[in-house]
Image (cartoon, rainbow, N blue to C red; front, side):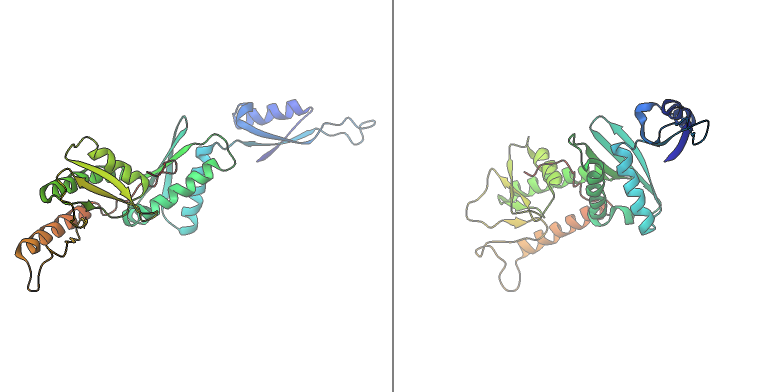
Amino acid sequence: MAIFYGKTVDEAIANALSSLNLEKDQVEITVLEEAAKGFLGIGSHDAKVEVSKKVDDGERAADFLNGIFDILKIPATTNLTENGDKIVIDLITTNPTAIIGYRGEVLDALQTLAGAAANIGKDDYKKVVVNCENYREKREETLKVLAQRVADKAVKYGRKFSLEPMNPFERKVIHSALSGDERVKTESEGVEPNRYIVVIPENYKEGTDVEVYGKQKHSEKERAPRGGNKRFDKRDKKEKSEVIRLEKKTIGYGTFLGNSLKED
């Protein structure tokens, strides 16, 4: 905010716009004092206005994040892009691990807060996406690979496979990735925040248990007896190694909370 003077209010405003190099619709103006001629020159004074640049929704969200980084002493800056009702804030940092967090939990929290800062008190909602080192895109590709692997396993063994709990956006990616696969169908089960996807193959064998991908679970009939079952032991070991490899690829990339997404 800055104070400007003029012989009239209009002149004071004009002086402010010229000094700030802004248009009138880009600033907020508060008239502090009207000009007064006084009596015989006594008590006369110029008009006085307070002028500040309007902060749009994206700038407000970016400023909010910058304030958080200052408090937490995280070396990060924001790169803002606005396109209609969508705001994208890319975070540039020398410490992406601190910004992204385990599976994107920190980045998701930052995105939720930025969305609130941008939309508070407003009727026209804007979607806010907070990204860091293309994490969102990389995570989506990882989920698509995961979806295909689970579908292949479900079809191969004729069993239902459930995935770990995911947020609405991640579930949407999985559903979409398998929507064209006629061999399987997907369903969301559970209650937030532990809602998860179950992949059901067309050749599903009724009466078998649901298997958690990476943590095999079998019916009593097929469960390995004491001493082990070579077929399932071998499959468990292979399944576990695939999950570990997948997780290694996703270190530093997390989930996409998406502050404008509906649950499925």
